[in-house]
Length: 573
Image 1: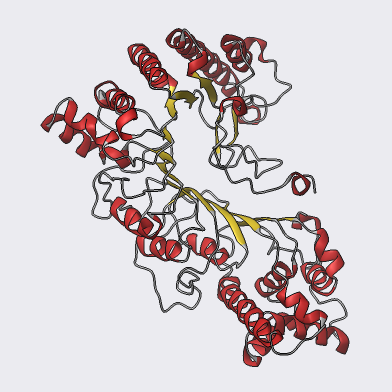
Image 2: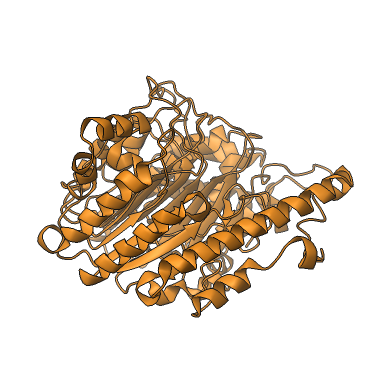
């Protein structure tokens, strides 16, 4: 269900909260960023039959379900009675959806939703408290009350996407919206887009800060993925403190926004993960395509990390900055210990339990033009050479690289690395990315999940920030002439980029009225201006179509363990 299809939120909330049959039909809910903006002329912002004493009794009973004391019940009822507090009504609506499996909720700068952030943790705690106390009482007094049965019923596990929609360059504490949903007692997985903090320390006295209300080890979430986000280290700590060791299986964090006021400390990230050292199975640490560390600022401390303490870790997706640190540190390490010293930093930082290593952002680090050839590729070679003695379970290697930024001789070295990995019984996948600008014609909405196979947006917008050039997944073990294939692809993509730029320039000359609409229109005659690279890629690989990731399931190993947020029946709702 998409809330843009209703113009009367109170009426919908009343129906859902009073009719379990209707509530059970809602398995997936999309809450757009504009849900709080309804035109008064076309909307009746009043509860259905709210003047009726029966309706008032029903609403008060619903408030009682969501609170742990009469005082809290009265306060919540006061918030929703007039039907003017949209945040309170939204909270009531969400708590009534017992069969909800997927929640996709957006926020923007138009409204901070202060009341929602204030009420939601209290409502969740109230529900937990009442369920616990009711369960205790039923052990003494038997009852067939349907109300007790409803309270004791555990809602279906839910997957949540929290997305900020807007063009603001700096974060303004959007992470508070993320923290709200860590209070869900039935949270299975949570995804976040463009959520971050300002640089100032959090105000723990602020009652509208849901991080401050998180209880340690209270959230049963199994999978967390945050993209283009940057949390203050104190918020980051509280978020992970709320997770349960043994329950949380995979954590992925992509640092975003080079203009953020909030710094990133690698040591703080690793410290927050310490309670999960013996149980975490998947870890992803990366950054957005625009390198976020402009310099070693006071707030940024991007120092090298070691993952050897994560004794249960099976899958590691890592950007070079987490192994070697900031580019200035890399340059220093390469100059002080040329050759083997800096190259040893990768394999010596990996846990012996590792089954899959995924190197992302495999490119020259800022200001270092020889990092790939002099450090990264030799370091990966050492991983393969030490596989049998140090990582006996390491069977899968993934290398994600921006093809157009790689020199041809590096591709020769990469092919040699893949051959060495095959000798050591490792399957290598090359993931080619960033062949076109993310705002160009060959971009897609970036999928989610460990294997990037989860679609959250059924009808993605071209204006979405979560876009990127479609990736090409190549099973290196199946390509005898890998270097030649990559060189051919590189030349083809360079040619396509030149054609695209030429077509763009031609349209720019026609004026602004033609600029945006015609170049990306599917009816535009692409035969002269833009070619068809996807057909070339599929033909060149002589395998299943890999463009846009199609066919990549043929090269994903069986133990990938990506968390699927929806069953097929939910996807089709």
